[in-house]
Image 1 (spheres, one colour):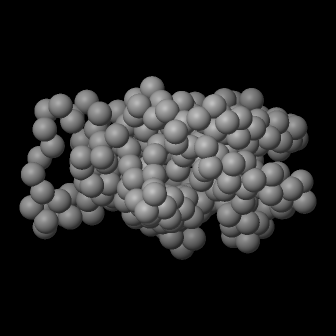
Image 2: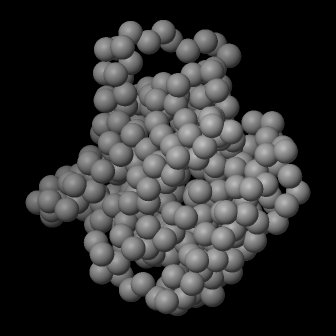
Length: 288
């Protein structure tokens, strides 16, 4: 139980770090194309990760870990950042954050399929309930979204859920920072080529806020957040700790309002209160 609580604590720190990812991405795409942003953040994070791996003299992953690491890279290094950056060209960051409420369910499903998690039946009631509440709210806000943006966010959720679960399984034998570091290293050559291809021809419109947003999504969203997140999933259980993502809309929407000046409706706050209750229920029934 002690390890499980430590896992939930570590996972919560990861969620708090990730909460600013979509608002920061929203700012960054005001100055960079989605492809350049996705590739640049991965290359910057990969450079830092490679430095840490070399400095600490970490052994290369085994051949059996290469495919899972490639899945992690496709899910969280390439897929989720690119799809969300594309989506944010069509929808507001506030609306995209609401879709994050569907991510815990996706993570839990992949946790069962890939990680061998076996939560109690009541867990699924709370998990599905939380996702349903957030999903219904998202679809009710039709004036704030577009079909392409919504579909891109749904695709991002599926790929991210798989990447989370796969990385958590690896974190049971490798440390979380090693998992994301090696995944970044695997993706680095492809992302470097994409970065050069999408290199901006004009930098005069890139403001300080855009540079700061790029720095945040590169260092915190792409690297540091995963250190805590994968550790939390490995210690506390993929399906259970994954439900903490239901809390992400609250802090994310708050940041969107403060940083971007986007409206925060009372209905958003009410939805957040409901999903907090769902998280508490899911935690209670997360393990047999």
